[in-house]
Length: 301
Image (tube, rainbow, N blue to C red; front, side):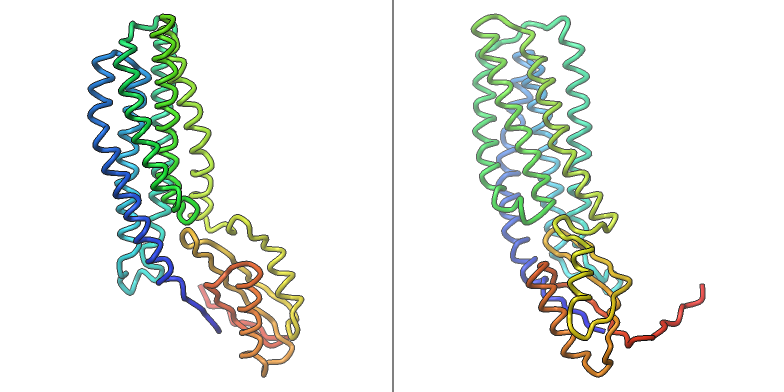
């Protein structure tokens, strides 16, 4: 039996960087939230209030993401054998669900206003939206480096991206209202923003659910792994192969490998681990070597 666990230090280092990214973006978003809410009420703009709603969901999502990164890096009690790594995946799932819920409400309100669009104070609406856009661009810049490392950070990044699209939509709507008096552009912008956010969050939900269901990691072909193991010298077969993701960037593999020479286990384990690391990027590995003809005793239920 062989297990290799060397990801904790690397994961902790990434977690520290992501905590700083999330904290900075959280402060920016929370600071501008009040201005957008007050501005939306003063201008009577649904698009601006929708953008404020996105900003509110951003603040909640960033706070949740920050908490998840913090707790994932904490020492775990003995009964939590994987620590708190899955907290980041749960946060990503919650963020994706919140995005869909907020977007659904905005779409509903947009349809309500589409037939009788109210008057909107376009100049103030425009300047507030420009300020929101600048804040969101700063947040996107901060989170960009961590979005490929962590599904949790990607969820927060998607929140900020959706709010950035919202700010752009509000600016366009404010410009059309100011120039042409097209008040219908306000609910139309809200509708488009809501649909874009639902589209962007669907993949996040799918990926978070796949991790929780312990599906094979994206980019790893289980059949290709099986064939690569069987093709090695001294290997007669493989069964009970499982490949899953513990948290972003931490993939695991367990398997029973049938050997034709029970005396070559140490060398075979080294070769298997090297191949799985170099070819598939898997480091968290547990392999049970079995001699040919070995029958494992089943535990009575």
